[in-house]
Length: 429
Image (cartoon, rainbow, N blue to C red; front, side):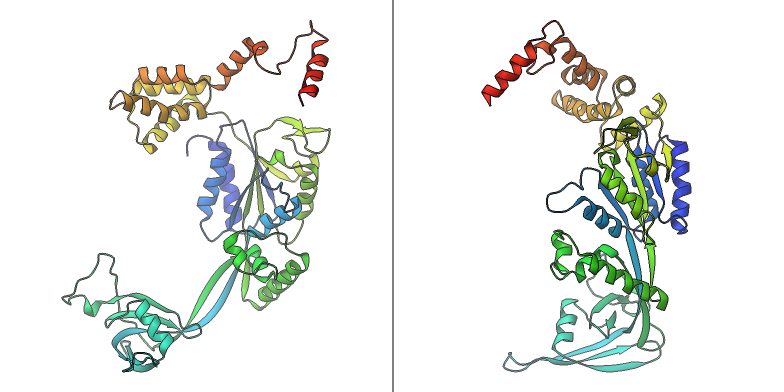
């Protein structure tokens, strides 16, 4: 990441508190002008947290749907962001395959039977195989010399790799072949397995209307409150027994100013619940109208919710930082560009916007490729700058020619025109 040192330091403090589990049920607001890296900071937090901590990303406009109420959409977002780490002890058989014998019936239609010989450094045992186990061994392509594990409860077979004892065998092996030590001790072992699932996944699986298939379809619909209460009760029991632990995640809502006053009221209450994730909001609005009311508020949010938030402000990038960002972007897009062209692009980013300058990189490379050049030059950037307008130039053009566009605002010198135009519109309809 480039720049925003103060905002990144603040995010780092929050990240440390999240990892230590000290900030659950708190909220954070990242506020700043458009194009100052608010979403980038949130995505950086998600990467730093890793895969174990749930991170859910929503946009403020995503919650408006005809199929689902706004509070239901927010509730699902909340419960997606809370993980449950469930500990489970399973019995497994782990050893090196010495020999596999499969007896096929002469007719070809009967049940297959067989024997599997497994060994560790201390013991060797022969197991009788049924049809299901034989199919599992064939599916995993298990052969003598492989180190495997068998889950006794489910019968699942996992191949860990080839034994080091077979490393010198004259056999055709792929580059992905992994060599492992022959297991030590007894064949049968108890192993602790940890599963991390979100509360929302548990809700969907236990919902009679959808079942676990809805996890893959994504169409979960509204879930009854009774089911959620039962899940919460069960999770609380598991916590007391030491079988499970809660992992508070992060719910990131971008463009939070798009939420209305009802959603803000729900968030106020939801933050006080015992099972609440860390809320991270992002907005680029100043003092604007709160959606659903006629009142204005900072960032388009009510004061009572803002009072609960820790606010991180992002600052506009300096010219040096803009040049660094554009340089990284050129490397990402494999675009060769001269230093003069990069300097010009940086000036455009300062005068217009960073996003406009980033868009120009790809378009300039296409113009360069058309003339069969190897490097994007100043002339290519100037040509693209002339072809595509930025927001400022487009607005200036609109101001100069507003009377020539449809439904433009009429000046005060023609007071009767709006009524006439309105009448024309009604007759057209």
